Length: 355
Image (cartoon, rainbow, N blue to C red; front, side, top):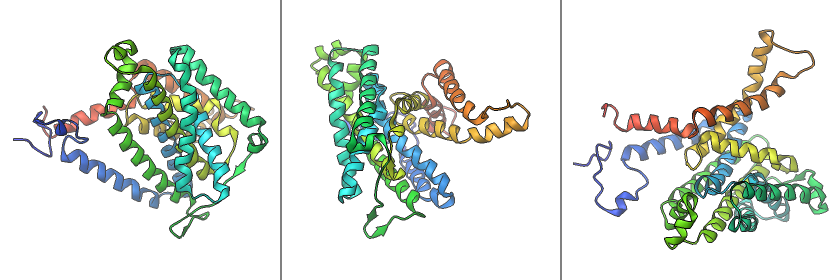
C-alpha cells in the first residue's frame, strides 16, 4: 500500500498525482515547519542581521528570474541588475505620488517585464555570446541613461517615503523586520508560481527551446515567442526585486544596479545551481554570508601576522574570495549547492531505511 509519509515506491496512477508538488506528507510538513522557522527567526536577531536576511530574500527573487531566463530557457543574461534598476526607479517615481507599496510592486515588475520583452527581441536572431553582448549592451545603456537623465537625478540618490500597511506605521526600529516579512511573502508566492509554471506547457517549452530550439519548432512550439516570454518573466522577477530593494534601502542610486551587480547575480545562480528552485535560495545565502564574514576572516589573518602595510585585507579578500568560489564551483561542483541538497534529500527520503 502507498505510504503517505515515506516514498517507498511509485504508486501514482493518475496524472493529478504525478503533477503534485509534494511526493509525501513529510515533504509538505517539513516545508511548513521551515516557513514557520523563518517567520520567528527575525525575533532572535539584531537589526543588522535582519538586514542581511532581507538582502538574501531580495537577491533570491532576482536569481529566480535569472534562472527562468538562463537556467531554463538557456538564454545568457548578464544584465539582470539593469532590470532590477528599472523596477527600483519605477518605485522611486511612483511612491512619492502616494501610491501604496503593494501597488508599486507589480507595476515595477510589469515595467521591467516590458523592457525585458524589448531586450529579448535580439534573441530571435542571435545566440550564446552574441546574446550576452546584447544584454550587456542593455546594461550599459541603462547606466548611461540614468546617469544623464535629470528626472532620475543623473544617478544620484532618490529618496522613498516610509510606508504604512493596514494602519501599521513602519518606523526606524521595525523597518527591516517589516520588509523581511513582505519580501518573504512575495518570495514564497512567486516561488510557488515559478514551480507551477514549469509543470505547464509554457515551462516545458522553455526546456525544449533550451535543449534544441529547432526540434522544439518541429514539435509545434514557437521558439521566438518562448524566448520573449522567458526574458519578460525573468525581468518581471528582477523588477519586483528592485522595488523591494528600493523600499528596503529607502533610496535608489545607480551604484546598486551596475554591471558588477549583474555578475554577482549570475554568480549566485551558478553557485546555487542553474535551473533549480532551491539553488535560487542557496546561492544568494551562501555568497551574502561569505561577504559578511570576510571582515572576521581578515581580522583572523591580521592576528596571525599576515598583513601588508597600506593594504586593507578585507577589501582585498572580497573579490578574491568571490572569484575563487566561482572557479571552484565550476570545476568541482558545476551543479552547485543544489546537488548537495539533492544528496541530503535523497538520503532522508528513505530514512531510516538504507534503501
